[in-house]
Length: 327
Ligand SMILES: *Cc1c(COP(=O)(O)O)cnc(C)c1O
Image (cartoon, rainbow, N blue to C red):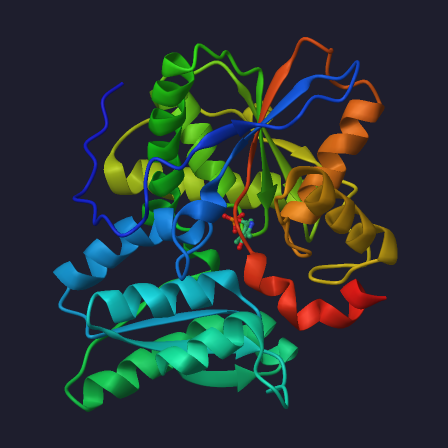
């Protein structure tokens, strides 16, 4: 299969390193793709998607990127940074009440001068896309042009960022003489996993792709990811021939809910940092790594397996949860 990529911007530091975690006895080896190192301000997975999305925004003559997410959305922060780097403005529609003190990603958005609209959880789930397109229309009436990016940039264009990441991983694995059996990622809006699955097909790359969902459930994401893949097929004219069994979700690690943490999750993140010198985040990568460790414990993998965990970022989400960490 051939795929003609649209032009890409180079904002992220790529390729990100692949490192091996120190072995624990009798377990498969875990390698980590450090996508938390895509940049300091840009840290995380969203910039791989935004590199493709932002080109489209520029092509359409947009002067403002409009997107949405939770108060501590890594995607909203990465969008604000991307907009700034490209000389554009950003408007962020965030779910929840304006906190008294801006922290973490929200603080960074404020420093960048992003325009922020806070909406209720109900408004968000009922009509966030409408709210964003209203904002775009409003800009238009003032002679400006907004470009609406869906949650997590998890659409056809965004997903090809992680399709492209498979090419990068395959090349690195070849240089390092590594054959991965699994690629594991945290799944929150599905675009990362959709892209990885498309990349696996496009590049005929062998590792199984396994997403650990951090919200909703397996059937929600099987559906959502399939829809992203279908819209990529329509947009780019490729047939990825992906079946529902290609979409593997390890459900059971959402815990108390999206962006909510139990004390043992925080403890895990602390232990992990003290063992490896690597910070997982409480919303995505912490839960995904807890899932991976649990699946290892339950014997899902054999001890010769090589697993590549994608560290999708999220470090700034630690700071607003400082109270949980100091306990
Ligand atoms: C958004 C995000 C994810 C999930 O990626 P999706 O493409 O939305 O599924 C994982 N980790 C971090 C740190 C994120 O910010």
